[in-house]
Amino acid sequence: MRHTCALDYFLDYVKYDTQSNPAGEGTPSSENQWPLAKRLASDLEALGLEVELSEHCYVYGRLAANDAVYAKQPPLGFIAHIDTAPDFSGANVNPCVLTYTGGDIVLDEAEDIRIEAALFHELETLVGEELVVTDGHSLLGADDKAGVSEIMALFAELQAHPEIKHGPLRVCFTPDEEIGGGTAKFELERFDAYYAYTVDGGKLGELEYENFNAASALIEVEGLSVHPGSAKKRMINAADLAARFVASMDPCDTPRYSEGRQGFYHLSDFTGGVASARIEYIIRDFDLDAFEARKSDLIQRVEAFNNGLDVPRFKITITDQYFNMVEKIKTRFELIENAREAMRRHDIEPIEEAIRGGTDGAMLSYMGLPCPNLFTGGANFHGRYEYLVLSSMDLAVDVLLELVNIYTQAA
Picture: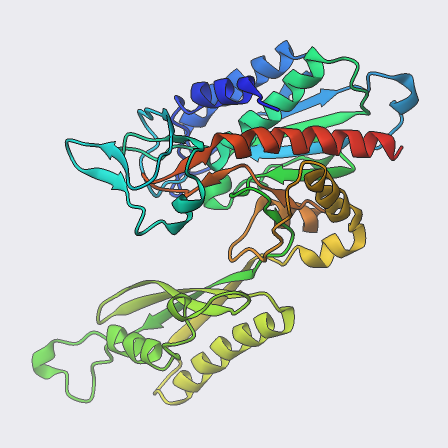
């Protein structure tokens, strides 16, 4: 079914610059997320939902069951984030709707900015499809304003068609997902859902419920600074020690050489001089035992380096970031079975692949709300080549409506 309002919402919402700020303090990390949050609260109220806008920029919405038969059904919730990534400008977004006829998609002819078919091979499957693209000077914001718009279209459909019976429904639009803070101030009791899905995936059919276990590692190195002219047997160069540590790591155990379910160490930052140095890694693995082994390996490496020095000069701090949500999804696997069924009722074959990254659903799952992730129809997130497939967007709304029906009928 063509859900015109989903596109209308999307073209409107991408006008809001909602880029989150990794250096920001507090939640939200940027003040520019507030205008869209307030707009969404107003739009949800217009669709008949009871709405709360929290002090931390979370928009909570509740829609009561429209039939007494389903009033005591456990609430079903949907979640999407309002912020866009700090990787590329989210200001002055100029979306364009076009029918893709093949070849490169020219975004800005004067500056020869284009989505090259030779580089983005998936375009060959989209000939004849309507796409929303940028003008090449900003990201589009399909991540995750497509998810926001699809959820809004769901509630618009329910308001327009009261004959569609449903139990209690919940929605939450969150800030700061792109910088890992989407659940920092998420209030489960306020959300009040028993089942939930994030709507934050990519291509048609994506159903995600497995992700990396993740941690960060900060290694601080203390040197001894002495004038180079009189440094013999006295100077301890922290940057040199740090470089030796990095060189001791397996160069093939990195993102560049990993795929699928393979984990890695990623050197994300390296700074320093003679007096001090800092090495920052992120640690990723799908298998929990392998993940713990990776953390132990770094600790042992630090100990080995310290043992070879006059005094311990390496200090390591490891911080767990998130865990593989599949361990929590296993206990509520009906979430996956119902999503599969909702897709297949619309001739969509589910694509179930492990996420080589993280999701708010992972954090929510460990907070007590198992929460798999659904597709939105967007692609090439976080940059100027981002696009949204309109037929996939419409099917995302269909799947959300189907999930409402499945959970209602299961009551």
